[in-house]
Length: 223
Image (cartoon, rainbow, N blue to C red; front, side):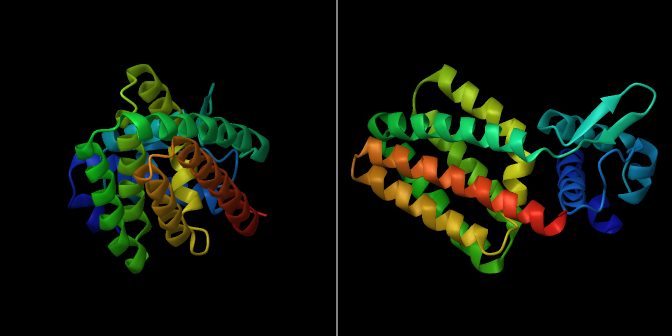
């Protein structure tokens, strides 16, 4: 693992460290209250402290870790209720984005969504969660842009950043990445039919199913 981390550039390195820590936290390997020392993590991942610091900053933004006086960075306690509230909120925002995007997107934007959907098939077949996560993020962010409402896109992206770690984690439950891709296909079908209300309904259901998958994953690994 150390060698793999050392081969990639600084930007990706912080992402890989963040993903590794996310998996360790949600799998219960790092318990709530555990202190995370920058130097120890740097040695563990064969990195300098800079990408480790960036990874911890991203985890703090997601609520997976928190900074405490005299204790430094520690693993936060996962509260299912808080996570559920966040997913419910993002489900409504993404539903709005899907509805507006249906009516406002250009043919080129629709084509990009279709291309991303097609590209994700290989990641699903390979069971590559990291690759699917990247394409999943691009799919949703393309929908935000297709609303042609800059403020709404900004808000959708901001809450997506808060939930990024949890959204990635839920993809690890059972065959969630396959079901996620199928749900994307249903959303695209509604968009192609020009039915914004149906696209919104399917997007809302897509997000709430992701929340349910996350709850099951945490219950199985931590509970």
